[in-house]
Length: 331
Image (cartoon, rainbow, N blue to C red; front, side, top):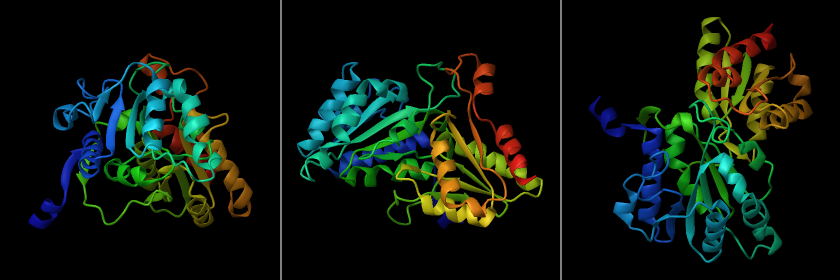
């Protein structure tokens, strides 16, 4: 028992991400962190708390309120051989830097014939559930998953929060990391890594035989809770955490559907044009004859995210919605 305690550490998603940043800064002098309030304030969500004092203002840089400017500066630093980590407060604000991300970061390696890699990591908070209203609460990571030339990550567990950053920094392409705001306070045991994190593959968080529940990010805890409720009813649900939204692990999705013959896709984004739509279309294209029921989707209501708590809860996918969609698929 003593050995197990020594091998595990109680931590939170926020602390795991902070330790990942610390490790990156300690292990490579080319790495630096920049963004709004990442230094003296310790980050809008407290992830970089204490790092200015530890690493100094050259490597933990507070920036002006101009996403286009500091993302552009990060791209320039990456082109010059540095390994910048750029923090954008929320995904909504990242739209101010979309020109830099889409027209520069995502395209330069391709347009230069492989001569200009952009090893840039951009972190941002996404998602709702915290009463931050429409300008701070949307899930737009599916928009970025549409863009060739970048990798899109959505760590949903403490382990992924801790261990996805290092391989992201080693990637020659820009990597966007979406951290769901509802996960920062989630606590649990952090096991030591068993090997390098594979950024190309999804993960089965719970095996099952009757239905595949496919999700990512902040919807994973709700989906696992739904699988518990379904298990109590005798329905064995397999829970897939996509983890990497671009490139999608198409092989794992189709192999799961081949086993269960039913699928529910849970996505906190709006239903129209969503990542859930892409996953559903892929299942229909390649696994149509494995399906015993139409693919179900559970997404947010197509409205700007409300501020009032009950309205926000009503707009978001909830555990009960996932259970209801699963019942429709298996009945």
